[in-house]
Image 1: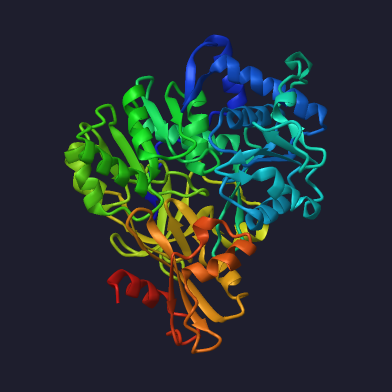
Image 2: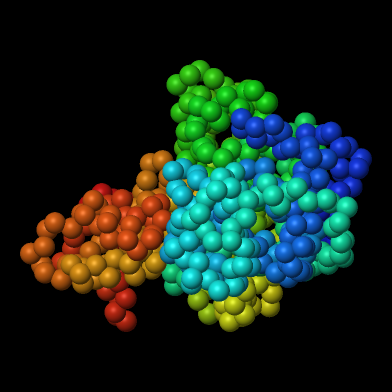
Length: 533
């Protein structure tokens, strides 16, 4: 059967820039996005910057449908880039700042990016130097724009400075009509094969995802969203960067998470809600209890992206004055499928389920694609007005869809309360602090190590991040005993693998237990890590 949570399919039929231009005219001085340590963003200032930037991008020859990428923290410039792209019908490709050469090589090449925005430095990484090492492999990449950088940097040939692009006269901008159903965003997410998949969303599908949030939690001008997730992640992009244009809710962007600073900001600006990964909630509760600070303004915390212990949800009312925390479920392909349980009398449902299905349809199916009954586990298939257009690769789209339902790869069931409960994952992914890590990608790199004959990478319990990365390894020489986490790091660094994907635990093993078809029994390995055996 189809579990029907659809209550509205109304679409905005307007781009974020259409709405931003109107708001700039109606309320030019209204502060909409707050930034840690920087002046707030107002309707008028950000629209002016976006128009200036769009003028320069137009002069560079960029036209509707071209892809521009940005690998930036949650800075003001990212908001201007997003608006400018919408004005011109450009496709934006947000890239998480922690990605390194390996990920960038694939994403920029696959997206056929024509222009890339990068910071000069962030968290001690020299981005111009990193991109310079890849430039010869990216023939489609015509322009690299350095944000908050030095104009005399010589590490990139023909690079441009962001400030020179926003010196343009916005009166020279040639307006174009942009179809709200056209492709707006390419966002890459880890796949089971180790190759990231390019998720495509339109202006309308993302706006519908925002409206789902606004309607489910009845948000209004009294609310302020603390957003610790980066704007290059689906959560930060939709609910941190674009939400204030589609509503009267303000957001407060953090470019780096630090729990003491987050608590200060919540209290200083009276933040009322947050959507983020489990570790952030855990740290806020610990901080509140240790400092006897109830964070009195906070009323809602939507928690997902990693395993959420029920006891963590139960602790919230005891530690935070008026806050209700709850589990939610979604993905880049189908954002925020469930919206949690927010009422005091729903505490157990909030703690033990992943939320009620809200404005989506869901099927739960067996391996043959047949529906199973209430309370029976199966793969979750989902469709709704906020669903992605598909993957950039048509073959990937065809393999992941049936009758308009997206195959999530997640295993779970539906309760009598129309709530979803996730019990396992069909996809071989590790969700570390809300970020997807492909086990196969890490395995492919480890298999290139001369001392390793075979490896299996699996998720292991992590107190702070929900899941960590563990590598089980069979050595070429059974007498080898000197392979450990530290000894593998030079190999991983040389491969250009992002640090958050590096194994945090290594277990040497003589052989793997396998299925009848020869596949490694990763369920057995995960169970050993959970039991500590």
